[in-house]
Length: 63
Image (cartoon, rainbow, N blue to C red; front, side, top):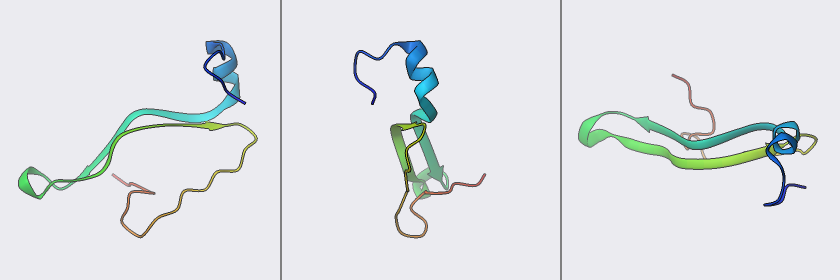
């Protein structure tokens, strides 16, 4: 389990993936829609995590 006292080295070893300030915008100008805005998340190794949501909500963003 990660805590606020987890060292940087232990944190690196404990995480399978993480994001900091993740953003995804569709469209441009006045038609722009932020699907993701400033998302911070960490996925620990050895834990099962599922992302759920309606179609088009940004679960899988392709370029």
